[in-house]
Image 1 (tube, protein in one colour):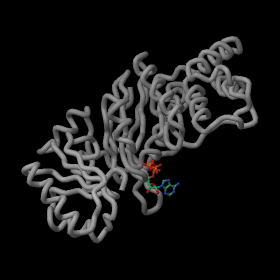
Image 2 (tube, protein in one colour; image 1 turned 180 degrees about the horizontal axis):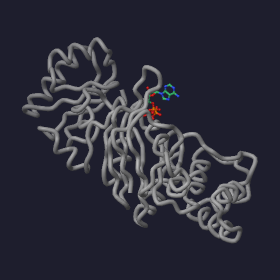
Image 3 (cartoon, rainbow, N blue to C red; image 1 turned 90 degrees about the horizontal axis):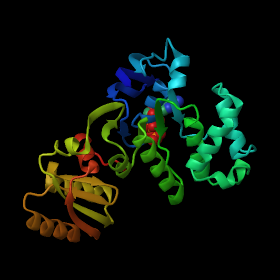
Image 4 (cartoon, rainbow, N blue to C red; image 1 turned 45 degrees about the horizontal axis):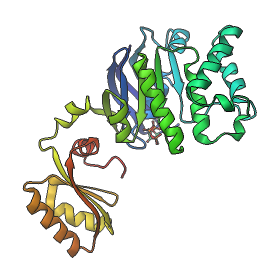
Length: 308
Ligand code: ATP
């Protein structure tokens, strides 16, 4: 459904996308997981034709955005980070406007807009202007607008950032429903929980590069040791971080008020780590021994935490 080969894009000296290649099968839900600035939005903008790549090939539903932009446009639905709706129009009017851009007949527009409003749980607000909606509700309308023309593939760029839990749950349910119905989805996020929960394949991006990809199990299997001691702390300054790093070397990874240690002997390492923290005046808020998650995979691959 989607093939990308050696995609690159620079903004002056910043290499935002640095040779990304990926392939997404029809009906898959694929997560691009990476921290802020990893190049996720730039990748989505390159795939949707909003930006021209410096080099590389893209094929979407068999079409090339450079030579067949209209066919690509009909094949994709895009949910950008910035909401692309009119505040003074009602929810229904916004959807009618978007459907009109795709040349859908008026009768069909009414039918599809009603069905979309029902689907996102906002039918009762259909005739109220968008300026009375919460950010999360607007995001849901944005998703409805992006699927009105029944695209073959949906690009979602961090759709849950900065919204209320109720709208977030609606969005999760909607994605799972669309996935069950067979829609192909490319979903960008910096929340590993979302990638784990919603997507069947995950590509980890960092500094414009795809550093690993696979199912959650395949990504975890890349770690030599699957157990981690995880501490949440208070008082973990950069200086303390340097001291812990010197003491534990490659086995330790340090994020913002967080520490992950790959243990040799779990009980012995816990005792030693607790002692070290005491000596360095770091308070331990929470200690847990757990299975390696995507955060651990990201750390192992990049040496940094996803949310540093
Ligand atoms: P975020 O989650 O913060 O949106 P991202 O993974 O989507 O991050 P991008 O927005 O694609 O990352 O940015 C990748 C890099 O390119 C960053 O270093 C960013 O500062 C830079 N960048 C993005 N857009 C521009 C632009 N228009 N001009 C200059 N630099 C840019």
